[in-house]
Length: 308
Image (cartoon, rainbow, N blue to C red; front, side, top):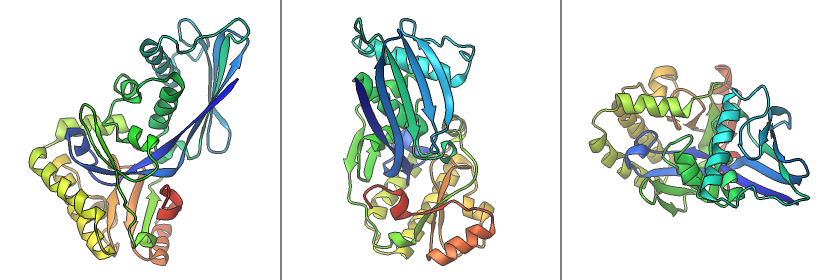
């Protein structure tokens, strides 16, 4: 028997960092996600294979079905350790998970990413959500006991439209109709390096200042972005947003820091310092500008955002 699961990737458009403290966030599920296929096998073990976007194996291990620990010499591999933790937590929350019979005694699990692992589109969140679907458990429980974070990425994994997200118990998730008329002037540029989400969260918690007052302003900007009538208005709002997040995190906005001669607006997405940025402007200008600076991964809004 084979089971197949799929989860959407994500991009956080507003409230990076401050979403952890209750700010209202606009998040978008992406056209690229992660697949998880489970096949029953006769061996009493879990055979795990992870494929990248080119179908090349980037991780492989075998887990003891009873102990849910690695049986190989790579047991100290952090990926093996995280998978072991996920399996154990899922089993703890659903004792029927991984139940077998005489003929089907184990499982072969294959995961496959649609995007490069260093793109920051949610390789962890899509894995967690897929495992939650397979184990029939709450993905937020798996998240809180492993990677941590606000959970907006789990919400994107499960929704096929833009969402407003706010942490809570339970978190508030509202599907919204964000489909800007100027989306042909919105582009996502990869910065050629990966940002570690857990490190970004830790740094924010250590350095944040005056977040309560700023959260109110960020909430207002998020609401206004949904109704921005043109790109100029949108540019102004994300400029305000960048300055506010810069204040609360004691960081310099990326346009001011790296691209001061850029004619239009640029916004960091997620943890500042890596992954994708959002840039606005006419397509020829955007491509010429970033190509000249050796940034070659430039995706249009329609290419990357689900159902856009």
